[in-house]
Length: 252
Image (cartoon, rainbow, N blue to C red; front, side, top):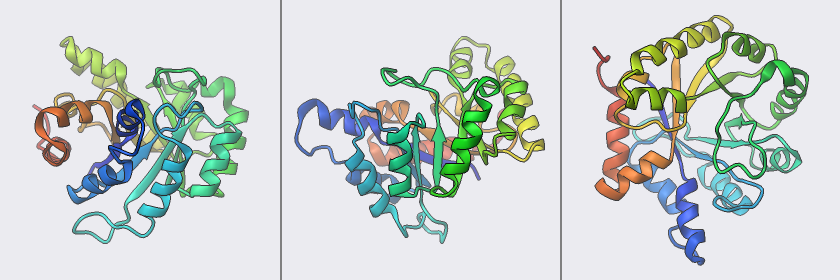
């Protein structure tokens, strides 16, 4: 089963655009869990333009001990971010199930590239070792390059999260199958090296029909497209639609 982790950044963006307390991040996290989501993801930025530190700590407390709908499996909390002191301190305080490291500079609008692990391997090895004291597992945001996958395995990371915007663009342009093969080869190599597989960025109910067949795929983290769909369909119906897209039959 491929797990769905709902990224609630956009809920915080909407709240912050008006000020005040609504919509509430905890409320939409709860609605996600009631609809069957397996986890919650946040990516706090240094300027707190969406998720704030206080949101992350509140979610960590709120999700502690929670289980997935109709299951004894724990709800997972995933904190994404660049591993600076601010991020490392937040993970140490929240102790999430997963810490996902992204190479974003502070002013990045959104994540737009995977790590150059070959170049930053020593830095990442040290950070991964430190984070494993606070998080159940550590994942590296990565592009489907075989050399980078092999370098990622050498850092001690538990998983990689494929940066899937290139796949999403290719899918819209009718080149999805070719792009999928690139990701699938990288996923196969990652699995051989003992890495778990996550994916995220620009995924939606359409391109998941193909990506769900990715070798070893364990989890997807989705926020923007899910919120856009929720404006049309409603939150609960949208969570159900994404769960269905992940669980459906293999694409022909």
